[in-house]
Length: 198
Image (cartoon, rainbow, N blue to C red; front, side, top):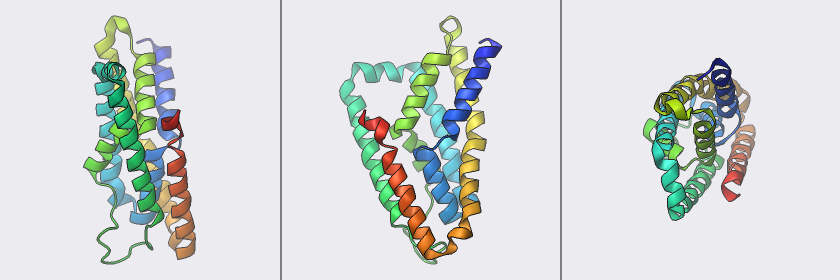
């Protein structure tokens, strides 16, 4: 991979990982509702889960989905339904740090990693990255390099979104502001389904 292609890949990874999407909106909301430390497993799950998705797409899963369009449709439906469920959970979140509320918890590492497989933005990013930035002459090495770049770029990106949530936490300690914030985050999460509908 030439230096200019590598730099273009880094820019693509930064922009696509840093822009709003289901992962970043959920991390922002988790930072607000649970704090940075409790959101770390969620952040790590996003990072590792996406790298695994990239490697799977690069290794041929994308071709399998083209061959079996029903599987692609099933993943899109499952992803859409799960995003609606997550939006509902965010919209109905209670006040910050409610004691004894068992249902209120951040997304776990495994939940966040598994979510990458039904995340519409994640699939678009993975397919675009593998098609655009891999080199057919040295495919496997370039595929691993694409995954590594995203793995490195993802850590500061998801941390920034969770950190922004923590910054907003004090301002959102007012229950009315928090309710409005959670509803807005839920609506934005539902709107992030737009690529899924096209």
